[in-house]
Amino acid sequence: MNASRHLPKRSSALAVPPPTVLSVSPGSGSVAGGTSVTVTGTNFSGASNVRFGANAAMSFTVNSDTRITAIAPPGTGTVQVTVTTPAGISSQFVTYAYTQVAGPVLSSVTPASGPAAGGTTVTLTGSGLSGTTAVRFGSTVASSFTVVSDTQVTAVAPAGSGTVQITVTTPGGTSNGVAYAYGSVPVVSGVSPNQGPVFGGNTVILTGSNFSGATAVTFGATTATSFTVDSDTRITAVAPPGTGTVQVTVTTPAGISSQFVTYAYTQVAGPVLSSVTPASGPAAGGTTVTLTGSGLSGTTAVRFGSTVASSFTVVSDTQVTAVAPAGSGTVQITVTTPGGTSNGVAYAYGSVPVVSGVSPNQGPVFGGNTVIVTGSNFSGATAVTFGTTTATSFTVDSPTRISAVVPPGAAGAVQITVTGPGGTSAPGATYFYLAAPVLTGVTPASGPLGGGISVTLTGSHFLNATAVRFGAAAASFTVVSDTRITAVAPPSSTTGAVQVTVTTPGGTGGDLTYEYLAAPVLTALSPAVGRVSGGDIVTLTGSGFARTTSVRFGTVTAAFTVVSDTALTAAAPPGPPGPVGVTVTTPGGTSTALTYSRVPPPTI
Picture (cartoon, rainbow, N blue to C red):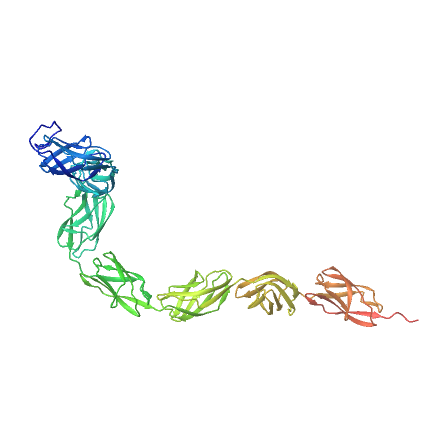
């Protein structure tokens, strides 16, 4: 306490007027006390006491005969402020109001980290910070602090380590904590590559330690164009323009690296382009192309002919990606860098393909057949699709024609589209996948070697049938419906069963057989003579009788019984006297006739 500051003591009688209190400022403060209050009035010299109600000020200073600075004691309510001097006690009813004050609250600290040696000035933001009496970093008191306003305090960090909580103490209490990290100074151990073009723009990898929270990367005196802290031991930075050999440094809240790790700026030859992928795109633009070559670092422009690319990205010294602008025809793409403008690589703008037809327009579900797709703008086509399935293969025959091998698909209709540099065609041609025919019945199932008989085929998917075959032999036929075909059996040179098949655009089907049979051979009748009244049992011998369908005496059908493939018996029907031809008929045909004679009964 200085010479004009006193503890309360008894007043002594002086021949001077008593003190007068005219005002106090501020007129209110925390119930916890501690608020600095300025008391103004007269006759304050020699003041021995300042009271807030019945409580003496925690301390006070007589600044002049008209001003006192006092620290309010704890209290409640509204109280009279009085000053005591040897001449007496002030009597004016000048009041001071005690108010409840919320404890301090911290919301942020900037910066949130610094070196272990301390000395960093941080800004604490929050509320209720007026009257701050202490700032602590963990348990360590700040080197110094300044109350800027009720919402802001600045403090100087003491030395420390690790992550600590910063708190603020006011008469209203102690705040919550906000984290502050003490860190180690960064160490740079290497850069790769350690050289690059004078115009910058290339990516450099910095390795070392203590990189977390890095705020700057510099190449000599120039800040990196941009950088990313990949980890505590790695930073990816884009070198700025520069010349000569410079030191690369990293700055974090803990300090600046000091290792003499260098990066050399070199003169770079002009850019060279070797390829572009893809080499074509739609006239509307928007295609992202990849340009490959050398000396592409520091690219400042990419042009398609005379038109600047919509955008571009330098990937590396050997690669740039660019978005094609709108255009037409074939143009030269060039790249410009501080080293000059590159050679050109060709890029073709194309029109959207148009599909107008497909032939044939139908085929089997298992695919594999070749179709011809017609239309326009097919040059450079990259895909042909049937619905959502890509063609097995295709060949661009001309700008108006493509030969494509149909992929497998489900039965039904699909749209064919063609994709080219100009885009994908709108649906313009329909292709029908057809199920293979199914054969369930052949009636009759056998017939003569000479063919010629009508055979009914039953099944499904017969519409648009293109062939019916008995073995390898084609038959004439008529499609009656999707489930029925009538065919004329072709002749065969050999007996036996052959497979019957039906072919449609959906494929070939059929696992049923038709049997070719030889005509029966009749070699003998016994007896060969009988009564005109009929009824005689005649034994026929020969071969091929197993499937006999009729026995005739002339044109009259006889009842018969097949005994074996070489014998059968028949009841001779009545008829006029004389000879008559007997024949045997099977699905293989009708035998050669033998003569049977009817004789009248004797006349008496």
